[in-house]
Length: 134
Image (cartoon, rainbow, N blue to C red):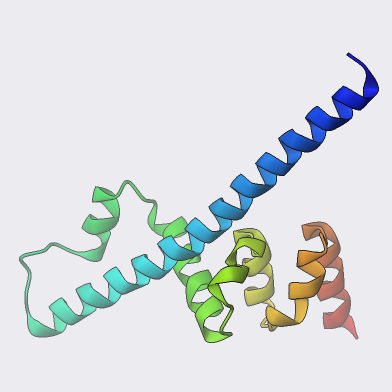
């Protein structure tokens, strides 16, 4: 196979992978949003003394979700909502990137242009860590 065909094939594969990664990022934030709505639902049931629907933990088990990871998804989704990240931009916020920004109490919108331009997680981490030192 010649280099031009290989280059074209590589480009097509990486573009397809990028699109699936964007979908995964969007889905994780959407799932986190639904999970915190489910959690709020269970808190309301608890306040009303209704026990017919089990607990939030049983709901997570029924969905085959790990509570520790689910909490991170929920925290990231709340953070995205708090900073009014547009749903169209969810695709750019990998859960590790959003968690890094959230844990360091930064505004995710501040980094959106860099992330859209392809800034790596490692480089973003260096920027955020250097800001903490300054």
